[in-house]
Length: 258
Image 1 (tube, helix red, strand yellow):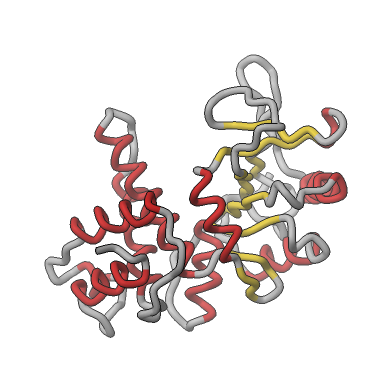
Image 2: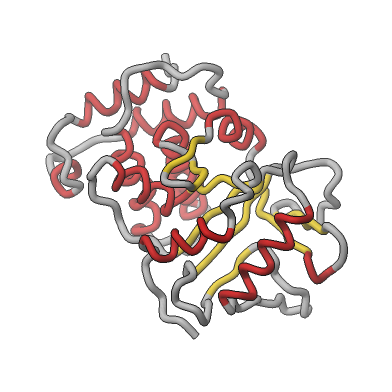
């Protein structure tokens, strides 16, 4: 069993090697995509242990699913089971081969032709149980926005800073709401998404995006309205090129928040 370790070039190269022929069928988001984008700009990025992979359902093929399972088996990933004995096919972790990312999580849009088992997870069964997958459901508007604006960096299909920021802001709001509702959510987990959104904002140019969904504009509006700095936030993030007000104004401009 492998130790918990941050994803680095070796792990990303392993992923890239296995999925080089399937670039139309996935998009990398989350901490690993954030790390790639920030390091490409020679900026510091926090360590992360997992790959968050959004499946492009309209392009998804049987060959991709087979390839994905080959990847899981080659890495020696642990497949967890629920209390009822059913396997969990959307999160894989603890590979025996340390060249593989420590954790992989799959996400997808909600599509009508997948049988829904509950409100958050969909089964993606291509043929039989051996090559079954499932995925955590993404908000449709976020999913469509992602599919319309994905890009390629160093041979991997990712969400760039313009897409990662709304996803980070959404995760930040979601965790805050869950903690306020009584869930045991760590403050560090909330702050990491806020801090990632701020770090990524440094890379933005003041060019408004087209067709920004209302839900994204609304969440950016709340985020910028609440964002403040007592003098330590940007300093601790190593940001000295922009003020907090400049970052807020830039976010409002890029995402058409009026």
